Length: 462
Ligand SMILES: *Cc1c(COP(=O)(O)O)cnc(C)c1O
Image (cartoon, rainbow, N blue to C red; front, side, top):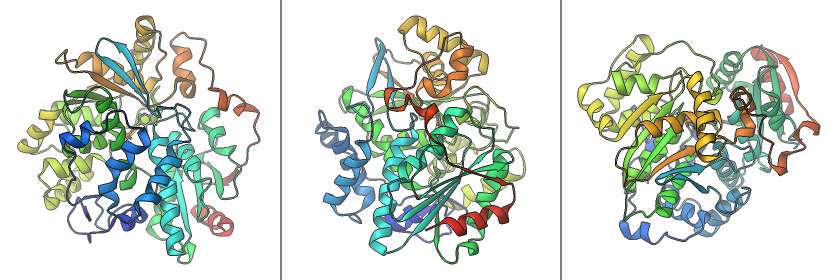
């Protein structure tokens, strides 16, 4: 198994290389050269297995023997032992055929833990084997930073530097990052906004000379291993509801499209999926593209579901590559046009996408309405991201015999603002975090200057 770029011009890489690399040198994203298959027998044999065992079986072909089976199994088991629910990602039945897949039982209460608990350990394994160290740099407006820190805090060969905009992330989100006091974790509060922090990370990847040869690794969702880890819960939840003998549909609160693309990979591997419903907030590029063939950027809107506030969905490129039947040149030229001006997909690729994907955009007023309505009907308090999915799923319930699985991407305690606005007194943090507001914090405030940030990284990495 090798990995190729969606723009067709970068060298093919092994699994190890692709995990350590991030973006392809031609500006594209890496995808597997062939999509491995899960037969009906493979799926049927997963019934009743633990999440870790299903994870091992689903991911093994992507790892391609580059980590030996015993070691990989141990890595997977350790990653998912950090989740507070025995089922790791339990299904919660809302009504006759609508289920919530609770992806928020990891250390930071959002679905990004599923991928990042695994990615940190895989990176550390490869670095140890090579006798190398690496530096992770990332910018965050919330969920990714804390999940990455939790995923790397025990990694001997990694130092992680996460930049967040000073005084512009919620207290819970900041404390989830800054109360991790491990020696290899460095939180930097930038005197600027998220875009300033992001621009400094991008500039550091573009010119890494300040690190004198030490590798810089990206842990955002362009990293293939994150997609790979997310394929697993689509398979595990469908099997729990009767796959391969009956199909299911999924509804996915989406932003950068990494999560729903993982679902699409599960479908291409052989999982019977009738439909994927994409839910967006008011930042609706995915919905505009699918519904109206309007593939264009619009200004960023701050919403009650902030982890879905994006202008461009970076992983959509991976789906476009499939829709354009793996024509890297066509993808490259479409994305070049998109960067410059509003554009549209060609007819045939758009028709292919519409066969399997539906979409809905859900605004802030509706998010609040859904939180109240879902509580009234089911007693569940949804987080605002999951609320977008709940509404989109209700609108797109096709065949009543096909279960709809809505992905619950965050715990409501993490996004108390929306829950309180919806009229609830709030949601307590789960027991393992109930002293978060008393824990000691550590972070450094730095000006929004590239040289200051790079000096801090160079001086503090171990
Ligand atoms: C990151 C995130 C999303 C969006 O996921 P993508 O993979 O970027 O589409 C949705 N909900 C929550 C809570 C998130 O943290």
